[in-house]
Length: 253
Length: 299
Image (cartoon, rainbow over all chains, first blue to last red; front, side, top):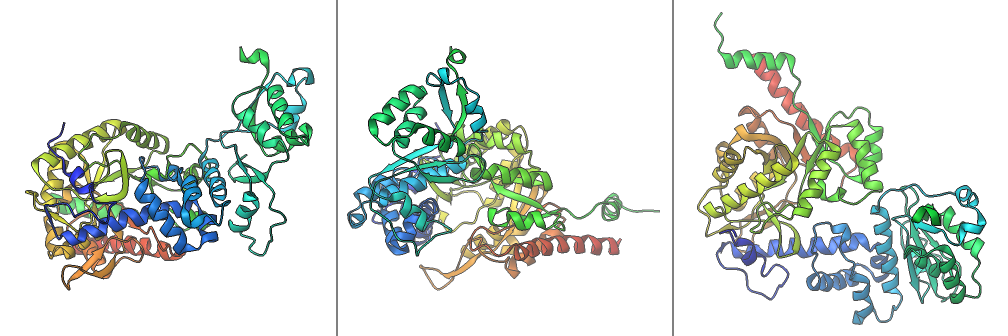
């Protein structure tokens, strides 16, 4: 295509400190400047997405872990706010993080936080909009989620740990229990909101995000948890700005 | 009454036109301070890639900036100096920002950052040859066609020289400007950093620079290190401090060479409080005004 083929040769050793410096460079020791720029700036990008994880592990631990991830999984896109999606599973498998089995879930909440931060703007429906729907038609309705709405489920109290370690952090807080937690992450206006979901709520919202009508989502949530409380869940989610439209059945055809 | 045309033009310019605007890079940390600083009349510059999300706070802040100030848009990842075709998707995002925010200046770098579906997040160097010249011109043509206006191409800070290079950087940039009609962004910190790193005179490099194509100036801070190869100084284009005295001197020299363009102070890490950053832009503005006044006094 082009005669110019300089980039392939120059890129070959950027992410591999053991590889030899490409030929044809005057001042080849300075190649390390670019190696350093690439790796350090990508570690910084990961650190900016996962500040609570860094706070928990300490900076040295974090940057060592992030360096391994950056070299194994460099970004494919220049949109760095989209980078690091594989980092939570990398943490799950990272040998030195096995004493913190909840750490990957804290990272998942942080990833969802940044996705919500950059998501498209949309006006949420209100409790009055919900109350205006004919109850007989409500279960056939599709509640369209806000582009920012995310659910993160954890077998651990990952949400409480996240809250204790994000700014403004509450470092003196103590975990009340080691129970599983489900987190709702969304952004009704411009500020990201992270909340705990009541029993069954995660299943309900996951089903709604998949586009199922409310009735089907409620059945799944009730099957998931005996403590599922529909009015409490629904009003809590609407209050948090989780939905942007209520599509009644006729409107869908 | 015999006055040369250029003197007439110059005296009119000093009498009627204010100095070109000075500006700074916009950081969200400064958003509230800028909004509260009614006296700041400069422009603001953003990195395009930071505003390529769908919505939310970044766009809200940028809309406020655009409402209150002139905006310049600075791309960092189009990879114009790369050896692969430009990413069409990324170019479309870039053009979308130009349409949405109507910046008064749009710029990118003579450098590359993407190859074989990997983004390296650094401004990487290229050899200057006839082949890379054709490739860069092709890429600049594509960008200008996508955005429907002139692009300014920035001279890079370099640390490495390629044995394959056959064209000097200034001649390379001049030829890109001549063939594509693009303008140039003269980054005086980059010019200084490169000159020192390669053992050249920065003043001679500036005298060789095709200033007639320059549409914007960048100023920034750099950091000083010892070179691994020998005991000479190695400068890194770090954008983490005030503009160095030597770079201010180059700015004065560029003004004396007749460059009259919007001038921006970049500061990207170890961010200072807003008044410190603003004072750097004020210095740039004052020096531009002083040069114009000095010229007026000579007429």
